[in-house]
Amino acid sequence: MENILFDFISKYIPLTGEEKKIILSLNIFRTVKKGTVLLKEGQYSIEGYFVLKGCLRTYYVINGEEKTTAFNTEMEIVTPNCVVTKEASKYYVSCTEDSIITISNPDMEMEVFEKFPKFETLCRILSEQLISKNQSSFDEFKTSSPEQRYLNLLDSRPNLVQRVPQHQLASYLGITPQSLSRIRARLLEKK
Image (cartoon, rainbow, N blue to C red):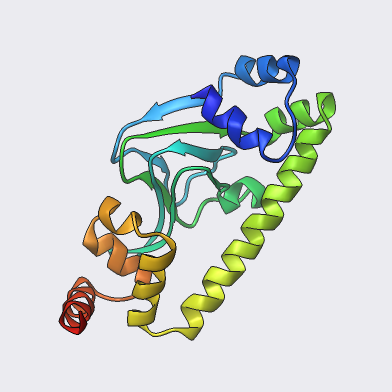
């Protein structure tokens, strides 16, 4: 597990043996089962997550219906808004498959930043990338048809289609499962 994390970090900043030891001493690695809810609506949390293996889903429950807003898979960060705002969460974060994640909190991060300032640089770089990715995803969602959203998903994250249930995928695309079935059927006819 730790080698996956160290390889990822090393793409951005070099790591010394001492820094690796500090990371390991933080006891941040967790194995979580499919279906585990990491965060519930109304809950306060200070935990952020980094997916080493598996898939986390972010969703709202509106009038009893789940509305999926994100799937985070390998090498992606999930920092719930409540960590930053210190307010109760408005959404859920759960595991759609057995996952291996790291868990951090602001106090832990500050401790590491004080000892190793380059980790703050790493977090800034990753935050900038995440903001850019989220803005592009939002723009793409707002400016494309449901069929185009599905095609974009097939192009950018083809394995996600096999990893999550169709009703969650449809919710993520902003359509019903029946509409997703029709889109898939239409696309098969075109081949």
